[in-house]
Image: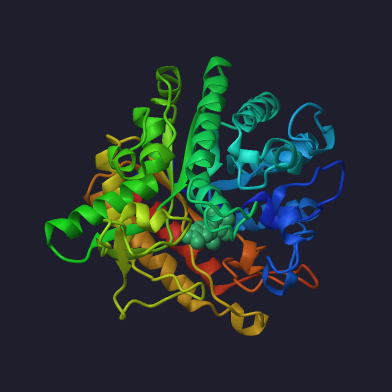
Length: 460
Ligand code: PNW
């Protein structure tokens, strides 16, 4: 397979790298507010400066070019474009992304643009209750339209949402992410409006006649049945439907997985026939953000048939799944298990369920906790992680025939890791958050060589 058909890339997100939180007319977003709330973020870190990518993007483009990737996935900060979420457009924000896009294209790097990576304009949260309201979906479509108009002549690969599961479950279920709400109902309502927002934006994209493709980046950890027992097989399958299917079935088939309707009942909102039509077939490709794998087995239930395990705002009880791990699996500093074969199985699962729609691994990577540059750059654990996961991806692509068309390593450089602040480093490049110096790590070179080998192999 040639480089043309398979894109090796690297990913970031606006709020995690840009900084410049109050510059050039940018409005506030929910993560600005959340990270300025005492107790929400480790060490009280904020993303006010982050990697200062807003001012240092040229240096970062050079680092992307030298890495040898042909794709760069980044997100646009909604509040930089529309400071109040809708209405007045901030030209300085448009100008920044124009400079970034033009700089990438000049180096032959294809921009893969995510419209929403969690940084909802604060006004929409305060005035509309954010994703709990359908009006936010309408505002998103307006914002998407502004972006298609401004950048659509050069950007051909769009993703509406990044990891809606996190916005729904961590933002509205367990409350550990912005906007920090806890509920057993709101995750489903927020998810519903996120789905409708995707549908409206995809329609605007297609009706507008823009060239290119629009997709969605959903996250999913793989669920391997703990045993061959039918109940464990079912538990694993249902867990995948509750995770990836929740946000992917609607954009492919027009509705939620049947098992969710059965288990969640009235707390799961319904699509009208028109909404279902809007959503069906609304993704040209599927993104997968994949970080780990667990074993799945049927959870114990009490005398009322309710699962004993009840985490993530009721999600665990709704799924009735017990997760476990092999103690032999290594873990990253986030405590996430390193299970490379899970990626191959996950890709095969997506291929089969969604009839071969193109898939991009829009994120995969690992954190290593080390703030000392002299040792942090010797990140052979991360290099091995990337090598082993991409080996499994290549098996899916070359041996299993999965239609996977790209891989984006998370992430270009250490950045603001949400509630974990700056201690959890996922970068191929070390970022010194005092001096903002960037230092490529061993994994940067390992990834560079891996790409060169794959491209050379495909040309012979
Ligand atoms: C993803 N979880 O976040 C995001 O898309 C990135 O912005 C982030 O930096 C990266 O993965 C590493 O964390 C996730 O708790 C955050 O299951 C949390 C979870 C999953 C993904």
